[in-house]
Length: 216
View 1 (cartoon, rainbow, N blue to C red):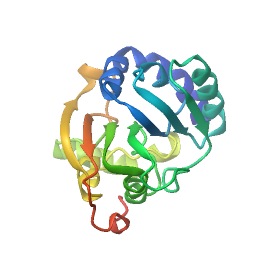
View 2: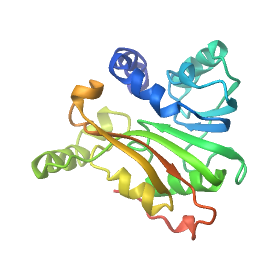
View 3: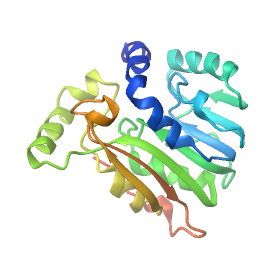
């Protein structure tokens, strides 16, 4: 049910998100893996330097919509079934990985980020656009309360209070660029606000990425 609601709502949200999605993907090249591709709204923003995309989406309805979007894209895209904790890609086979409003909903955020480290070549980039925990103590308490009760049930497993910035760094990435966004920037309201938009790099060597712990 949530997938069908999201398929419609995301099109409306795209009015505020599209320019950030374009910035998220600008300058990418080579082979890319997109985790949680949803209905494929990001596909139109990939630049011509991208030689191939593996778009991973576990939900059947969204995956079918993504397959249609892939047919209209200007770069080659293969839409596949899969989950973030077990990515269908070989070790060090990707030049970049993309996540967009997905690390909030993966069951095990630490395992998902460790998988991204695994499939990226040394020096490869993680491009991310995610909503994160609030900086206000009161808002953060509200997010935690929602996460412990109704929000994940209503919103497809989404958790609003995750410190995704810290989780990315804990997985071994080096953050190169980070922009903090709010409702006025994206049109995405609380509790799925604020958001972060950024780039992180997999170092030439990453110490034991499998040791990344799960997020709450």
